[in-house]
Image (tube, helix red, strand yellow):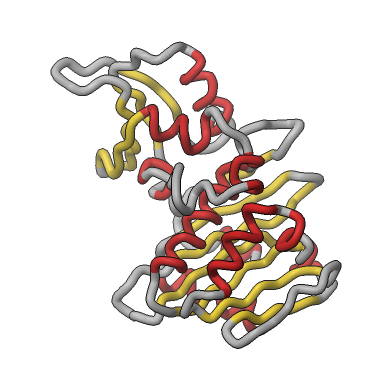
Length: 249
């Protein structure tokens, strides 16, 4: 999995807050979420432009926009408990494009107590991929949990995967077998103890329709509650990640 993180060009992105009227705390929250990463966070005033807009830029220009309010609802004024205890990210607080289009950026993220915001990115993108699978007519979905007991003890996670269980998607979940997760046609559990099971956080969806867009999140735990990860919409890279999990887990 580490090769997936390093494969290909690593994208560079920057976020610009335009005509901010929200409190200065908004910039501090953005810096906390992204400031230690390769994503620069700045602000500017542009005449005749809406207030409190966030632009995501790469070397070609603006590639995504959202409002400050959307980012606040998604990640700036919430923590991971919102997603673990309910279905946020599926039915509400869906990741805006200024988050999802950070694909290709390699993030080094810390969880609580070192940071309240950084690890939340991985949770948000996990929900984004799960939502995409739920909206699809079919395809293959693979998710590594480290501990399968999360499917029982995290109410939000349990609710999402109950819906995936009832969908037309071929679902495979992976983790250390610390809980009995019932199997049924279209929902398969895989257990093991090797390093991949213990350290990988991956969520991958490959749609049945070859014309539709694949998406994969791959992250590895590099220290206690510290993660290195990226997500991609590249079909070849997503397929490679899926193949690694299918054949080596």
